[in-house]
Length: 305
Image (tube, rainbow, N blue to C red):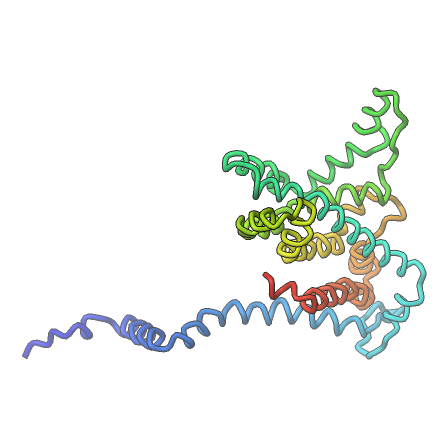
């Protein structure tokens, strides 16, 4: 007797895959769980586990004689950070410049994003996007070194000012130079989310505001700005966190008194070999970002996204 059923034409591996596919087709939730399991497992084991170990090691110390890590719980690293004027100044400088860079990028990004979303035509909009994103495609180190050549004492900026008969700016290797370079580097990360937020605002709202007699400033404060706040917050998360975590620009652009938290962490990991203290200092940006995200959520920014 001839057996011609389709099942007999598949090997065991193919029959298993067909059965699994049939089960996942009948159970969508099981299919979604199977789809998300690998990336969630990677996220928990690699990302969250690394953060957990970083936080735990902040409560350990290093033996002064042997250089070995002492796995005994203590708050000495945090006490040092709280009582040392030097470390408080570094933390304050890092947070202050990160906040200033964020405010600067908001001011610069909003008109650019509004023009691209509401005024520019398709061809000009595409050109502006390329111009805006072009620096991101280049090397980070190359961009920072370019600004180093511009802002140096004998750089392009001072040379141009001298040619115009003006005094030298002399902002190279200062906190002002770092603020300027950070604002330039992270500006595309602020323009993009604000542009997306403005583009989603229906044009009928602007027409309704004008029909009701609202002028440009009132339309901006009552219609545009509240609806664009989620984009501003999204961009600020990028600019603020990226500035806080940077340590290359302070090395290349900043002066002797321009160290960031990242520079102290780097020196304690690579030179002083005091990983627990580096971990304690590295928790400050993490805690600041958690508080910032909590405040943004409390203000309802995430619900508007």
